Image (cartoon, rainbow, N blue to C red):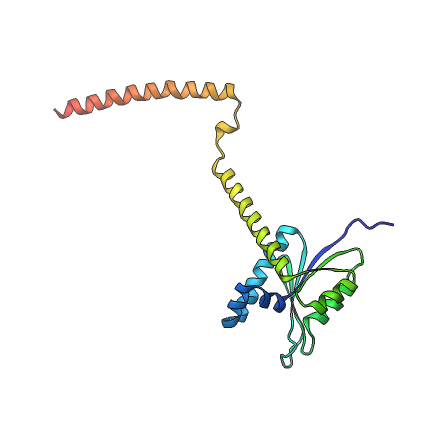
Length: 196
């Protein structure tokens, strides 16, 4: 029996990606929260565009007394692991909980993690590949927004009317214009005549 409703997942090793992308790495040196939020923003846009269920995992391995925290946002889930749990171990466990029929991609540049991911039937994408995919999606999103904006700006009646009706309306406009111009000339003549 073949399953047709396949889910598509993108699981991101958060700190691994932050440290692999130059722009996020620079931000993280002064503002780690800012770098996390920037990554979250990128992944939200990508997940919305691709329709994938995205999960970003940030580990709290060295954070004392931290408890696992799961934050749901539009299009993504953000996971902060508990104390002594790495993002790698959380990702491995999470992949095991999914169906073997699901399409699972894990974004990490950690070689050991990539091997485990492949062994569990998921596919891996490197941090560099994810950056290329996200950048490409952002360009396409921007192009679609510009097309929509142009379409909104160019919503003229003349584009929706048939040529015969458009011609009749143009004739009416011209007749009224001539009539309007005639009355304007008469008015101006009288107005100016009355001043002298």
